[in-house]
Image 1 (cartoon, rainbow, N blue to C red):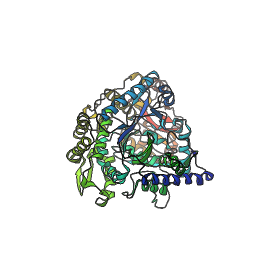
Image 2 (spheres, rainbow, N blue to C red):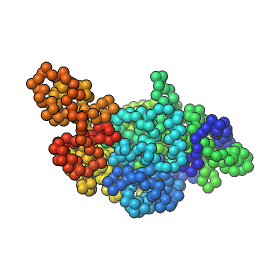
Image 3 (cartoon, rainbow, N blue to C red):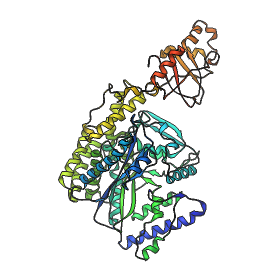
Image 4 (cartoon, rainbow, N blue to C red):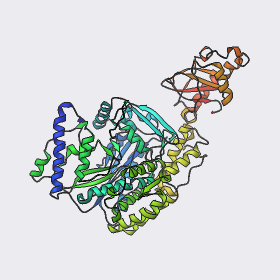
Length: 615
């Protein structure tokens, strides 16, 4: 909906909007019936979302400033003011189209990098930026454009409660959030494939069937806020961050706006749109000047604005799109589940793999909806998102590893599909070899996880996240596929060690007590964990005081006082430090106050601590 001026749908607008929406469906049915939808040539296209970062590799806040200076219609904004998007020109599926797209994308990114460099900003391709933090995703970081404000307000009004984000992986993320800005953590490489209306439903069902194994080879977003979650955490995060369904005490049978779907589709392409309209009410509108059916009657091709606007607020991982090119209407499938990065070469290889498998479908998989259970396919997709190449796929009646399925069946299928459509052997062989090497060695998610675990051996979480992001930038600048990357060692350091701050060295895995806890409990925790200081907090994580071993050791021989509460002996006048203070500032605070322990505070809440040993 980027080129449509939107506003919040009010009660008085609803009847008019619904009229135009239903009229667009009628117009699409008429165009299908009259054979007006383009069947050939087949075109492909892509959208490249990317991150903007500061010299310390944290998210920047200057997307609009950079976009203005780029001054190129290929570029557009995203919801976060640290993201931008580059839209590639559609090309016909033939010859060297993929290497041509590769060159165009590198040219566009080079143009953006030249402007970004002047603003002391770098560009990074990553499904989720490893260094992004909760302080980067508030409403203050939303791109200040009307459509994002309207979307945020509309979804919040529909939901009427905070978003409850819960993702369970190796680690666990559990938090409440008050806006849709968590969606801004995600960046993707969205791929478009034009499909003939004559066999659209069969092609769409096939796109669903292959989504799991294709995604398994392409995962590269295993980290969020320093927590190791799914191999492709974007899948879980996007689903929950744009969820308009409110929690209740009743079982919620409604489908999320971000979903894989509920079942196979039958009928025509309009049945997919009709299903979405039936399930999801629109909360945005725009100015409608023309009636779509009337335009057809006057031999004009309608843009179907109401339908496009509704479609822009529903986010299936394989989305149906209607468009017009060279005054001819067409239909395409938009693949939305592939992440950005790790390199342009990897992204184009992902596209070649997906398009090849889409075009190379053997006849035995025609009408797959009659022989395969949709829930197996849906389960494959989420298994791939969780486990990447470690996933088992239920394929054609049996379980098979992703690696065996891709190497033995899908890659040969992709070669056939590409050659059948006139793709140059040089393109097919180069890019599919990247997929093969990645499947046999490591993909982006695996490199990220292994490197991050190594870094955590010598660094605190925040510093490890920044080092990881800096090395990701260095490696993707060379555009060598991720399968060739060396996993980072624990000895890697920040590019500029002089700019380390308290957040780099603070401990976040904190043992704490409450004011009503007994001294006996405190004594035992300190002995068990060999620690000399304990912060005292309330249930909101606000710091109330501090206990030191000096405060409690006198109670070791006074067992009759073990039942005393912490509140009676804790120090309430506590010296604290900010996470953004420099290491030198923290050292001077400790020295001048003759202390060895500093709680780290953000908005009166305890978020970490440092000791003299950390310094």
